[in-house]
Amino acid sequence: MSQSLAKDFNFRSLLKFAFPSIIMMIFMSLYSIVDGFFIAQYVDSMALSAANIVYPAVSILLAVGIMFGTGGSAVVAAKIGQGKQAEANRNFSALTLTTLIIGILGAVLGNLFCRQICSLLGATPVLMDYGTAYLRTILSFAPVCLLQALFQSFFVTAGRPGLGLSLTVSAGITNMLLDYLFVVPLHLGVAGAALATGLGQCIPAVAGILYFTFARKGLRFTRPEFSKGLLSTSCFNGSSEMVSNLSAAVVTYLFNMLMLKFEGEIGVAAITAILYGQFLFVALYLGYSIGVAPVFSFNYGSRNKQRLIRLYRISIRFVVVSSVIIALVAAFGSPVISAVFMQKGTYGFELTRHGGYLFSIAYLFCGTNIVASGIFTALSDGKTSALISFLRTFVFIVLSALLLPLVLGTNGVWLSIPVAEFLTLFISVPKLSRYFKDPKVATETKTN
Image (tube, rainbow, N blue to C red; front, side):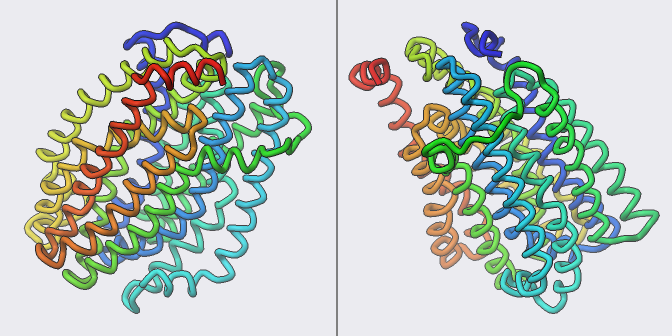
C-alpha cells in the first residue's frame, strides 16, 4: 500500500488513482437522489419537501462519520508514511469503535425524539407525518451510515480504492432496486425510500468490517489504542469536513424556511430538487479530494515537498477544466433535472428550472474551494481547512441567504450559494498559493 502512495504521479495516473473515490462519491450522492426521484414520482411533491425538511438531522449525524474518516485517515496515512504501521492499525481500530458507538447513540436518541426533531426543523402539519416516517426509518440505520462514511476514506488509505468502489456501486444498485420495490409495488411511501437507503448502506459497512477484520497485512483491525491526542487530532483534521456537513444542515434549514416564506411547500420541493443536483455535481470534487488525500498525506509525512507541489499543480488543472464543464452541464441540463422531480407544465417545474440556471454559476467556483479544503486536511492543517469550509458552507451562505432575498426575492435564494462560493475564492486561492509557492513555507515543511 505504501508503495502505491509513494508513486511519482502524473496527471493521468493521479486521476486513475482517484477515479474509484470519485465514482464512489457519485454513487453515495445517488442514495439521496434516487430516494427523491421515487418519492417525487410515486408519492407526491409534499413528501419530497418533507424528506428535505428532516434531512439536516441526517446530515448532522453523517458529519461525524465523515470527520473521523477524513481526519482520521490523514493521521493514519501519515503514520504509515513514517513507517509506524502497527500504531496506525491500533489508531484505526479505535476510530472505528468510536464511530460505531456514536452511530448507536444516534439511532436510539433519534427514534426516541423523532417527532420533536421534525417539529424543530420546521415541518408544517402538512409535512409532519411524511417527515417522521422518513426520519425514524433512516435514523435506525445510523451505525451503518457512519461506518460506510468512515470506510469510504480508509479503503483508499489501505490502498484498496477499487474495493471501496465496488462495494459502493453494489450499495447504490441495491438502493435503486429496493427503492422501486418498496415505493412502487409495495406502496411503503417515504418510509420505503428510507428503508432502501439504509439497507443499501449495510453493504459497504458490513463488508468493511469483514475486510479489515480478516486482512493479514496492511491496514487492519487490531487491539484499539486511543493514543494521546488521537481523537482530538482526527476531529481537528476532519473539522472542515464536519463543518461542511453541519453547515449544510443549518443552510438546508435556512433555505427551507426561506422557500416556505416565498413559495410555500412547493418552494421547498424546488430547492430540494436543485440540492439533489448539487449532491451529484460536487461529488466529483469530494471524490477527488478523498482519492488524492492519502497521497498528499503520505508525501507530507515523508517530507517530499517537490512531489507535493506536483500534486497541487495537477489538482488545479483538474479543477479548472472540470469546473467549466460541470457549470455548462448544470445550466443546459436544468430542464432535465427539473423534469426528474417535477411534472412538466407545473409551477414547480418552472420554478426549479429557473433556479437551476441561476444556481449553476456556483459550479464555476466550488471545485477550487472543496479541493483546497481537502488538500489542507490531508496536510494536517485542520485550521486552514476548517476556515475555508466554515466560510464557504456557513458564513458566506448565511449572509447571502439573509441579504440577497431582501432585494431579489426568490432569485436571491438561488444566488446565495454562487455568491458564497465566489467570495470563498478570495480565501482559498491565496492560502494555496502561499503554501505551495512561498519558499519559506516550503522550507518549514521540510524541517517540521
